[in-house]
Image 1 (cartoon, one colour):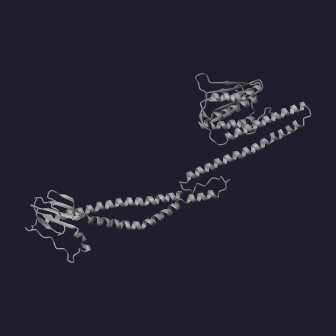
Image 2: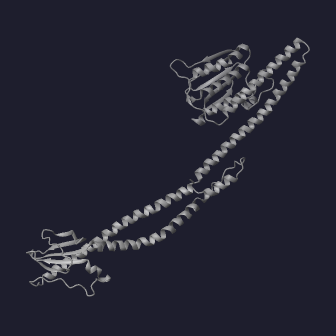
Image 3: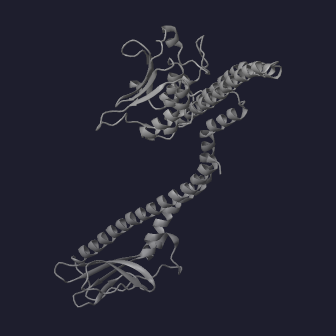
Length: 450
């Protein structure tokens, strides 16, 4: 069910319901006011009769007045027919009664208002004793007369409302459609928009209720645009970078096929193996970069550094043995915990593995690479030549590799490390060691994210 139909349904149900509740309370209030009015009239009538008795009364009872000529009571005389007055003396003898068919009951023990049933009709009777106890005056009225007045007043109010209610509901339906027209326009705009149009929707003239949704949609468009830009850039970079190693592999394979001697063939096969290693590393690093740039937030848990360091150093051990590099790891002193962090252990393993791999690849053969786990930072350093200012400025650019590199690489390792560090609120800084030699990679908390 659409939002417009749901809102209209609620209005069509709630409006008559609220109207009915208001009618009930209005009817109750009108009944209360009418009862107060007629009760006051009965009290006034009884007091007037009692005041009249003080000027003298015939010894014999006064008979009730004759019925009006013509038999039936006229419509205009209905109020008189629904009223009755009676007076009794001290002995209980009826002295005055103004109605022949209705006899108010004698209640010497009562005073004030009493609800009675007389000849099948409900009556409201007021009893008033004289101060000397000589007379008992009673004035009564049929309850129907009161109800008739209440219902008459209510009907006079209800009928116009009943006639206006369909018009009111129609106006509310029109108002709902009019109020929801911005949503209909937004729906049409989105339906006509092509899939590649990710421009933000204007929010200035939108109703206040739609602005949060438009803001969320524009944020979604921006994130999708960023993701598409990353994918296009990644696809373009991948196509560019894969073209060269594939061409090299094709050429080296031709050399292997046309080798004229075993020695020439062995040399060609060795170069072909190096090309395969480069291709394998390039594809592995590109897949890792694609995962960390996917935009999906990683699951964060309390990091246990021991298994992460063991796995990263184990992955780099074969390369370190081939280049005769000593791998070392320094932990905090006993009683001090390593760097506290909430993170994804798989991504942090990739981060450390890339840092160690780069340190081992570019360290002088026979030297050492040290991984230092501190309480506030993590350091990886080697004894290689210090990096130039130009190299440091471009370090982290994807597929960037300085000239003269002998080791197989893709130029993606530092980009992957920086991205993983950003996801964990860390900052990656490169520089020289404390003595000015070698290269040191420092991971520390990024103050902008703390």
